Amino acid sequence: MIFKRYSPVRKVLLKILWFYQKFFTLIGYGSCRYYPTCSEYARIHFENNSISSAFYHSFTRILRCNQLFDGGIEYPLLDKLLLKPKNLDVDSIKYWLVPNKKNRYYIIKNFSYKG
Image (cartoon, rainbow, N blue to C red; front, side, top):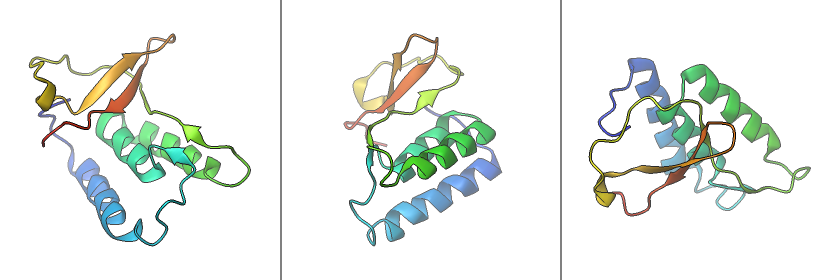
C-alpha cells in the first residue's frame, strides 16, 4: 500500500475528499459521531479498497452518522490484501492492518507516518 499508484478516477475522488476535509469540516467540526470521522473513513476506503466498495461503505457510514445511532469507534475493513509490505520501517507505514475473524483486516492509521 506504500508507493501504490492510483487510477485517475481514484485520484479525483481523493482530491475531492481532501478539499472537503481541508475547507468544509471546519464548519461542522466535532459533529461526526464516529471515530475516525466519516470523511477520514471514506478516504481510507478509497485509498485501499475498490471504488464500488468504497462508495458503498462510505454511503452506509454517512447514513448511520445521525442521532438514531450511538456512534463510537469503527475502523474501516480492508476487503483483500493487494500488496505485501516490503519495508517494515515504522515511519514508512501509513496504516496498520489488524486481522479479524472473517479473514479481513481492520485498517488503523499510523500517526507517526511522515508522508
